[in-house]
Image (cartoon, rainbow, N blue to C red; front, side, top):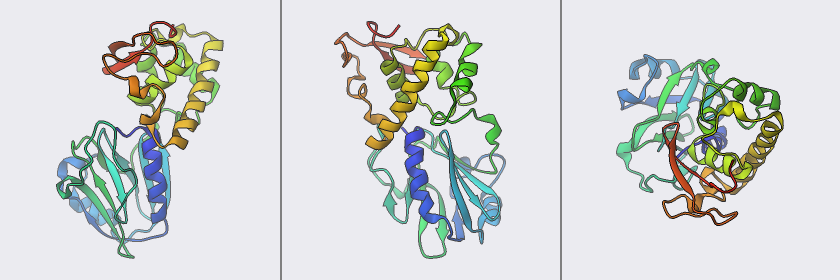
Length: 259
């Protein structure tokens, strides 16, 4: 599933399109166009525009053009192909197939290349000039002071707070479980129960985890991942993992060392 690390891979792939001009837009799926736009609107807005810059905030990929900014959201199964090349071979918990019927949005470029969004489950979307003020700071660059403020006033479960994109942008289910497992905090405890020293530790572990898994190649390459099953055991101490639903997501944690 695309979390911030996968979208960062997509951003790097999309960076090769910077400087190129959009000559045609193919938007065959009306459901995929968000924010009140349709195929005619997005085609008129983007055709002829040059791609000027690529950015990422959390799970949102942004392509600034000489006209509007294009926002791409990938949901649980969205993949970006650039110039016929897969930016990611396959997503965890998704299919390896490349069915043309799953192509939801295509930008054709002036040199014959193209950016293609494939999304079997149609949970992503495309938007013009998305409102990024609704997102919290990106998890890769959030400061300690910002993280303290995010957690301080919340009685919500710690994992749910970390996955609230309006508070902290980027962490999904796999990354949240990995960060909390590594840091030794129970995902179900109240966010505000962390002491200042706890938050400082969490901040360090989160930044280190994101850097390491980025180098490995994705959110699904954490040390906990292979044990995420009903019979899984903690790779640190061997305890049977606890399986719960927190924040609406299936959650794995160690009852022995996560407190």
